[in-house]
Length: 388
Image 1 (cartoon, rainbow, N blue to C red):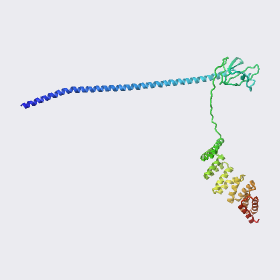
Image 2 (cartoon, rainbow, N blue to C red):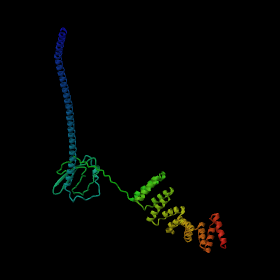
Image 3 (cartoon, rainbow, N blue to C red):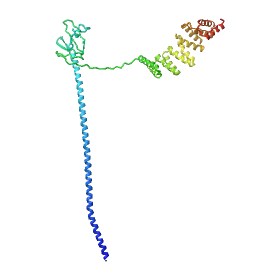
Image 4 (spheres, helix red, strand yellow):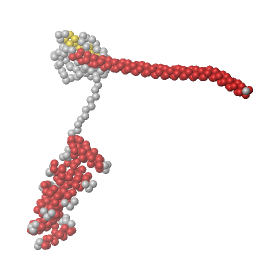
């Protein structure tokens, strides 16, 4: 029984201890929650303050930038107004000067001597003032100051008792009616005019030909070719540029291109002997004797010994002996003392069976005494065979 009582007492004591602990813990919890609330409020206040400060700084900076922009705009507008006012003032002065000059009356009885220059101006000091009286329906006295900028003025020499009119240039002084002295000068507006002069095709071609020749001297073949091509684009009939370009292409062994270029030039100028000669030489060197013959036939009456020599050789090679005889006889006319031409005629006549004239031609070739050793032996041999 005592044990049970002791247990009950212990139980009661524990319950009382738990109640005391509960009573003690409630105030502590309440105190902790109130501290957190204060900290949260303080943090919110700090955040609001920071945000407010940043916003105020942004507002201040924006306001300052706006004021600066407005000030710059006002300054620019002021400068523009000053410039406009100055330009308007100059225009007004020019207009006033033009109007006042136009309002001056000029009499037709004044001019007597036009071609002379007044020497009296040279005798008058630079600071002198020239007075002019004009008598018409109204009397006008014009006083014009002679400035140091103009050492001589165009004027009119009157006869005695004639009224005088002196008109000052508009850009130098202003003539004022009612005898008012002019002290202000209106400067003339200076103007620079740049005009582009277009060269004629001939002048442009001449310039490019010169540049091409200089490029060839520098051995800049590509540049020279380009310049000659530009000349032909401007003037397709330019023979010099075409021949030079064909020669460059021939030197680079562009034979067909050179022939085509020359053929285009011959189509524009059918009697162009030099282009025909160049084209025929290219054909002949390429083993195309027939094409060379066709190229030279239209100019078989030429006085060019080069054309006649090539035509004679090509004709003889193609057994066109009649054409060869004509070419050799043309050469004999040009150079009668050359034995080769007589020998050529003799061979062509001999080939055609015309032995008597051939024999005479052989004799003429030997008589010139300027054949090579082999040619001389051949001519003598043929004379023996023909019965001489």
